[in-house]
Amino acid sequence: MCAVPAAATTVVPPADDFIKRWVHDNHWLSPERRKLLGRWVDDPTPREEVAEQLGTSLGELLRSFNNTAPISPPIGFRYRSVGFAVTAMAGTCDDIADGRYPQFGTPVTLRCYLTDTSLLPQGMFEAADWNFMDAGRPGFLGYAYGVRSGETLYLAGVQSDIAVRYSYLFQGRGGETEIRVGDEVQARGTEDPAALYGQYVSALRRTFQRYWIQVMLGAVTAWAETEQELTELGLLEFPLTAEEGTQGHVVQRVYRELPDRLESTSRCVRVADRCHPYTVALFDEVTRYLGDRWKPDRR
Image (cartoon, rainbow, N blue to C red; front, side, top):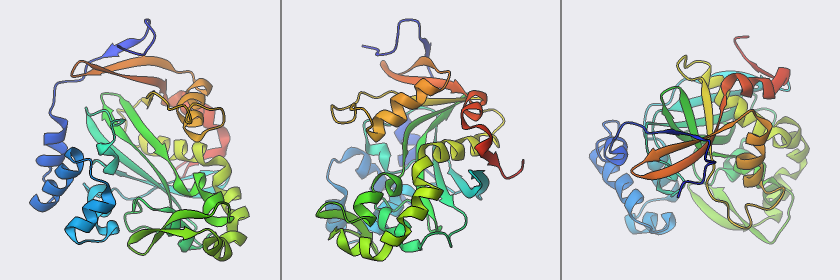
């Protein structure tokens, strides 16, 4: 059953074997990496176990899943006078194996970075990047992923581990948490990263954490402005778990409260007889929401 309101529009993208095109026949990847990425899509084995079976580090494995196409030069923008940059990749990330990744159109992975890396130690960014998404660039803050189809960028995910997990990572809350250590992810007592980076928490909050949803939205919009054919932004309305649906939960804030603050409409994207519900807003509406605090560098 389609979860969108009865008055919602329905879009049916052209039929396409998404996995064949962007995984099995992806000419940017070597045959070995295509085979490995195909296994990741089809095999529910946890990523740590896959790395162990292959005799490789988790970092090396996840980089092969997350760097699947050429990455664009950075596009600069500012939010509250702080400088950021966004890069774009016309390829999938490891979230393609998540059932919350509708498969149609052309995949897009957008990464957001802090441009003045003297504001925070690089170790903070690396500790939080347990998905190994930084693509070798310092100051990595978060990413957004989804597909583009026609005039619309349809996002399935917007996330920032450093913003959401900062209190566990850098303030010593809780007994243990997972952090990136070199090419692995390890469970560590929170007192260690807190001792190293706790003094920088106020700077993290001032530059990014308090406004991370707006900054990530600003990153998406800064890139979209360079793509003349894109006029709309869609956010997937996947069913929330009981925990995700609680007031104040980060998933509730991004995928329910944010569309409510935009002048959004409901849309069903129908792929292989399955309806994927999105809330869709014009990018003009998104820039209105971001206001004067957001400025692309070219303005």
